[in-house]
Image (cartoon, rainbow, N blue to C red; front, top):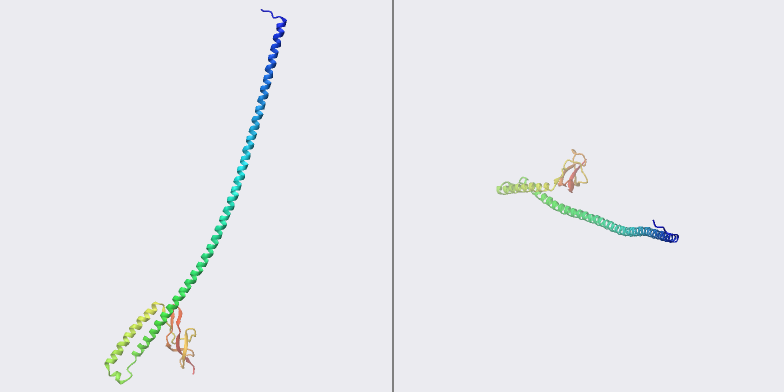
Length: 234
């Protein structure tokens, strides 16, 4: 075993102690550097979180502003559509009124034309009816009775007029025209006009004795009033 003298031992101990001191100082420095790095990392993370939250708030504010703008635009579009709908409804109602007025005017004009046409047919019927009545009368002179050709001619003419009158009555009936039945009825000022008065003890006063001009209805309405002779008490 080698013996170490005192001076050598003290020198080795001094060198070992210095080495330990250097190692401790190095560990302390490393720990400090590590602590500083950790603090810096935490701060970076905090900064990153702050940056992300700020971006989120900015995005939300921008989105809210866009939604507000789009809402105003949508509300404006709805107001425009509502005004357009109101104007369209107004024009539609006006058009419906104009169409209804035009329809009523056309119907009124059609009724006037139809009324004039039917009254013309009735006047023609009056002429035919008078002709038939005249042809049905017996000969009024001996000359008429002794001329067979004339009698046959009048008879044939009367038959033709009766056929024409029947066809005309059928035509009037197809248009809803029917004659009034006034003979024997009580006088009605709405449908009749008095053109003569006769005494008749068998009929109450105001009874229609006969008509001088026939009256007609058209689909339930008075087309032409009847001209009548009524009775009076003596």
